[in-house]
Image (tube, rainbow, N blue to C red):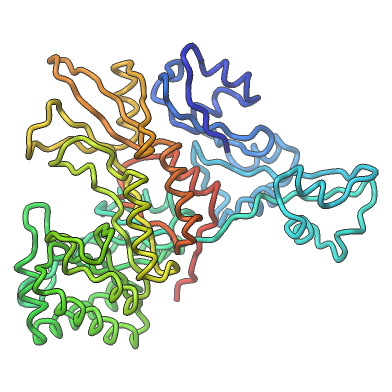
Length: 472
């Protein structure tokens, strides 16, 4: 998969000629809002000709396999399709490639040509001695090696909308975390309508994770957290309610997202984490937490001081780093998840939390700020696809900030008011995925489903294999 940044004067037809890929393939892959409109500075994904195929509307596996003169079984196996009948427009299929050995060729030369390894070719072809090749032998060329990671996604979409999204994204997810069961001061829980989502997750080999929160969009939750964390009796009641809910609903793990915990409650919180792990682990449940993005253990502020990275890393099975929201909805316009800030968080986090316990957060939404910014005025939040549609509507040029490695643009609305939009594109997503490999992290956690962003899922699939666990 290549990333191309549109230059002035380029059209979809010109790009199709340049890269040897049908224009429809590029359009569907990137879900372009207008077929004939490209924006200067817009980042496009370009599939590799004869190696990657983008599923078009109405196509099925048989039609695509016949196009490449291979069997449906070979195509399904090459793409690890658990249900070959479920294909979606925009889905990228890897086309199995074969190579006829020429006189003088070695397996090392062939591996280098196709950007794979000798070991991968040997495994794909069951070669007992890779050095023994002869002209005319046909070799299967495997896809490039990919590291395996875990992927979580939070969702507040319940009912049929949530079920459909889980079915569509099932191959990309290890965990799904419906958000959220809110704790009450007496240790009881405010429940959510998550039954349908959990059922869809289990049937698609996705592990459901119960999410526990102390806050809402209107309430910080500091007092509620204090009431529970300062009382062993209320904690015991809460833990009993958690275990009962997890058993009844079919959850396999817990994520604790306590925010704005009072600094004076830091030790209470640490003790609660230990008590939770001691209660849930014997039941066969795992325990994780969500952590704000700290760059030092002494970082000040209500969001940070009670969050002890080293204790979370020691006690819990894994953590989610919420490496987003620098571009806060009530704050001034800026990149939502700037790469330099994420790197600073990871530089600190990996010194006190084992890297194999870290899921790095990535957001799936864009923000639109009215200018000039007025303190406390809320920015609009919408999907990356909506951000591109808005840019197309106003025919603006996409800029790219090199420090944050994030795209942005400015436009003037119908009332003559200026706006600034920060979002993500293929370039910024790739930069974040590269951090996962660079720091050798456990994986990624997305906040949150419900915001379409096709480029993200294509790149995730292109760079990683997603770990799946068998459901009990």
